[in-house]
Length: 287
Image (cartoon, rainbow, N blue to C red; front, side):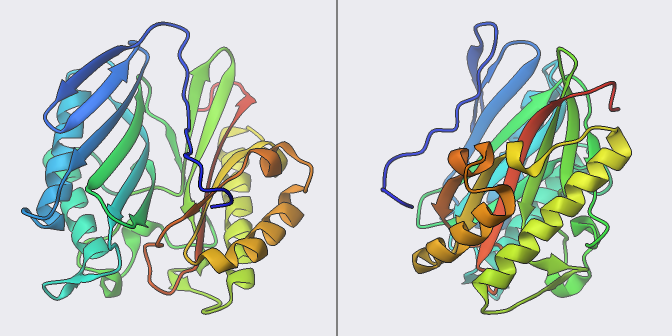
């Protein structure tokens, strides 16, 4: 958002990965980790069917790989809050995603991967994902109702993700993948119209997830050492969001220096900011 330059989030491997394709999925794997992208234009199928097809292809890839455990998913598609045939596109996406999990006999509830879903200014549905050999430990936020337990006022099918995923990554290290986190307590959006308070509440939720991960896995992830992506709905809110964020993590910290700010629509129309994070720490066995 600051300069208009392209943003590249790079993941590296110690061995040369092999690039492959199945259906709408392009992916690379080194036998220990698998990273891929499913991409489908939803203009013909509709969002529910498109989401179902994208995830069906993802699960077909994972079923044929030793890297069968889904750790983290990033979902991006246009007009996320728009109405389509009487139903919000995000709710249609949730219905298709959940059904694909069920069809593949994957948990759509407890144990689902960390994830986010953001609205873009155009383009197809893109589902980026990271998988490994070992199932992660799903982490929930005690301040929030688990997303997969939301009441049907948010749609007939609940969102399929955990608040975070804690995974061993080898070399005596663990990774924490924190899902897209917004100003929601219980299941309700808070501080409507106030981007400062929404940012503060989002960071409070991330702090609660970090504490839950420490309690369940015995691994500490300091806020100042995580890598963050901050999604801001309105460009003019960026200075306020950045001020609050840097005050929380430390203006000179690794987190502040490495943070990425992106302009995107949030999954609920009333939400103005969403923050995700990941980080690494030394650890004993966490699962």
